[in-house]
View (cartoon, rainbow, N blue to C red):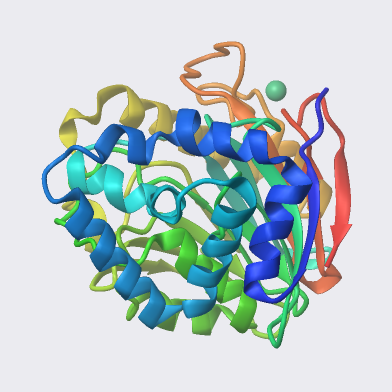
Length: 357
Ligand SMILES: [Zn+2]
């Protein structure tokens, strides 16, 4: 089994951008930006592209200038023009600007507020690049919390992670929804998440950010911390003003697949979502069933993330059951232990390894 690359990134924002390219290899980063995500390649001839990109650049430099500097580091070290790397970092925004109804269907998350080690949750990353496109990083930004995260080559933003306070999050796509229009000046959701890891230590800070920041389009997120009770929440997040907050249920559980469930978001479900909706409903049914019989421990969460229980397998591969995607990585977050357990590949076959922040 190929392992995900593990990077150590520290120093100034520009230096961290350069280090990412040096440690992954310039050729691999260029390949993912140019041929993997293809944001600049596919959209640079579309109407208003330059105007949108300039608006995004101005917006980012006002909102988080250090992230713009880190993108400059990636551009200089890889030889890619800055606009191409910027467009890559705005992939969620540009895809929705030009294809607003695009549905995404990845990932399952399951959390327990009361394990033997406090609140904890698991996240399977489905249908994403494997080790040739996704990396694990230990980041030590100047003047901010240090953190462990995983994300995609060429990005300064993050998919999921935990910082030194134990604050952590992992998510799942919203699935088949008809989101409201977005603007080029909106901030890509994964950049907002990057700042959560740099600055936050509680779920309440995350909720406040999610309800105020100009996000392009959110997702489902389980968020946990080591400082509050219950220290675990599910945020169903379309925009700052279209958001549902689920605290653990009477059994201490939170979970999500790729279907909106809260009253606040349910109206945005796209009924044409067909297979995505049925796959998500099947996984929810399996999660509910498994939660009734699984020990309330960190190992119990790992077993759910590795499960092939029907009707909706959580560890998705080889077209098992209703599988329409492939799990590429699984992670279990334990805030009180400051530990992320990561399986390099499908968790039914690859043991979870501890990453202590
Ligand atoms: Zn499996």
